[in-house]
Image (tube, rainbow, N blue to C red; front, top):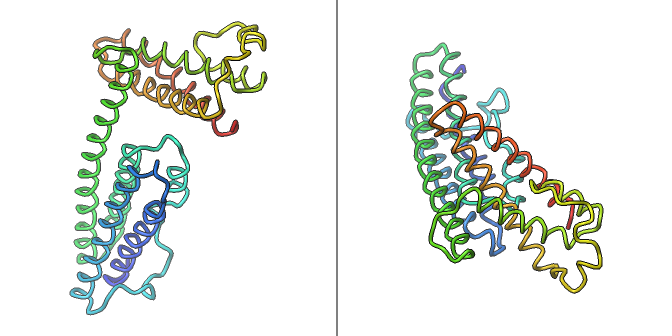
Amino acid sequence: MRSLAELYAIAFDVAQKAAQRYSALVERSDVSFGPLRRVFEVLVASERDRADGLSAACLTACGKRPDVADLRWAPVDLVPAAEISELGNSGLSTPYTAWALAAHHRQRAFVFWTYVIALAEDALIRKTAEGFARDALSAGNLLRRERRLAWRAERKIASNEIASAEGTNEPASAALLESLLHRDIVAWSQGLTPAQRDRVLAMDPYRLPPHFLTPPDRADTEPASGEIEQIKQRALRRAEQLSNMYLSDADSAPDQDSMELAQKLAAQAIARLAGLRNIASVVP
């Protein structure tokens, strides 16, 4: 980094680009995307405030606003469009995943500014970049707090839904979730072709026999397409929750044997979730 003007131009470009990328999801009008849209409205406002602050600071320090003419190379893309698109297109995205992605972006910015600090020869540039790094670290901490709150809220909602479905107020256990997921996978398979059904049932830990749900057994009981979509989305949520539960169990395991068992279950659950997501993406 050769000049303070160049440093500000890069920081301003990064903030503006982040605001633009997040804005793409704010413009989503579908009702189901509402909870995520509110998260990205906050993120857009934050990045625009950051850009305004950088512009004012550059004017004070350099006597001018950030100027792209001061850029000698294209700044690193800290908020890739592909990541935003993937989150926006996923039917499983939640406020938790949105906050988590934003926290990752701020962490990436912190790492970027540490490289700038390490390579800059000018003391003023290093000092200014240190301020940018501190801002990225502080913002990342705030985003991680929002991520934790969203995670707790989503897990509570999921537990309540399961408890309500089972007529109990007890928190959901992994065994109960496995049983409910098994039902969902079986019901999901009823709306598929034989080949597709085999793929979905292969994801089921119960490994049902090949003759299960033959056409005569399925007559008059096949769910409607609308029901199948609800069942599919519920199965994906439960599969994801199970993978998270097993990972959490592994992190808090009291001994080596418990940790290894939880890790094994987590690996199986993650592979199952990946398989179900893949099937859901290619099967209407």
